[in-house]
Length: 100
Ligand SMILES: [Zn+2]
Image (cartoon, rainbow, N blue to C red; front, side, top):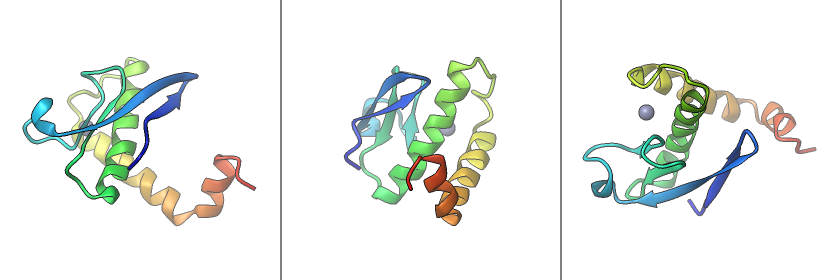
């Protein structure tokens, strides 16, 4: 995926791709064990991208004290909806990102 970090709330968070054996038996990504995002390196780029969005939502929830740690399906619903919105509305996504 070649993404080393993300910025959120004026902070920089590392994005690390690694084998899940180092941090989980069956996960696609993590945001709580490190101050950043872990992505399962064994997935296709498409899955890495959707996992990145999923983990960003976990990070937003964690940083704001939202109690969604046990609401994996809710985070998945929100992240899948956000990915669909961005991909289905490229003009809106460009506006949001400040791309002319
Ligand atoms: Zn999750």
